[in-house]
Length: 306
Ligand SMILES: C[S@@+](CC[C@H](N)C(=O)[O-])C[C@H]1O[C@@H](n2cnc3c(N)ncnc32)[C@H](O)[C@@H]1O
Image 1: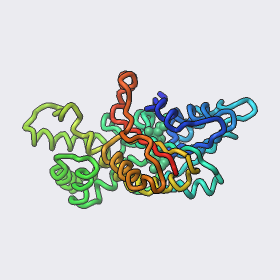
Image 2: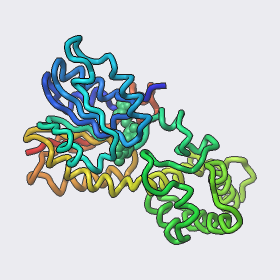
Image 3: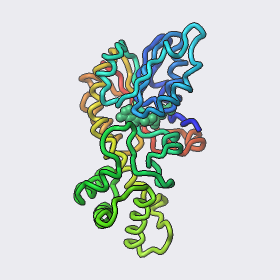
Image 4: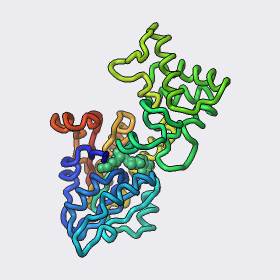
């Protein structure tokens, strides 16, 4: 099923898109935002769509296939790039995509990747522990089987704010001494065992504050595998530098670590290179939350380049 774009109206309104504007979507995904941005910039606004994941790109190409005026097929309005957005500046020069009136970064993964892919994003499925958006760098399994106990502890603590980080890291190191961890189910079972022990619970899933005990460990690993926080820190200044004066950047984050990075960067640059449009982050309306509960943690921050 196609990923439902979050805060769609809010993104489109806050970017102040008009006919003929050029837009860069750094996180193309299933192209829901891109499609709306192309509609708003019709008939001749161009879109640069970037995604690190080849399968997302294939889906986006299908979704945007029929897009555009009869005289302007999507192929001529849209440039598709499979790359990590950390290379934004380089991508834009390579594609000669100037000048840019709006940029969107909708961070994280799409529900299609979560549901369809066999890459180990979901703890509800038994899949190999990969978790890479693109195909580069070590997989989650490689990290779990090679990093020191201290490094794993820090990943779970810093990227997942996981209370039992130390115990889970110790348990992983013990377990991999017997056999390497390979699948999401093995990791989930290990986390559950640690939680059952700590909570003296015999429940199959000892829910913690309404969430599955493996949630934070999976989030932390995904962030580590894709170096998500470093990539975000490196990309924000590039996004500002490639925007045309008066152009806008919208960033949607899904957890506090990312939101903090965006907020601090915007505050540090305020009145130097940018004006903050959203003093407080925009969150999903009650109607959107009812239709799409996965929008609950989404926060949208927008700036305008000076
Ligand atoms: C939340 S989804 C975007 C959904 C999209 N806005 C839509 O309407 O369907 C995020 C997408 O960004 C991609 N992505 C995440 N980190 C990336 C990175 N560093 N570079 C390029 N793409 C990335 C993921 O592969 C995923 O397809």
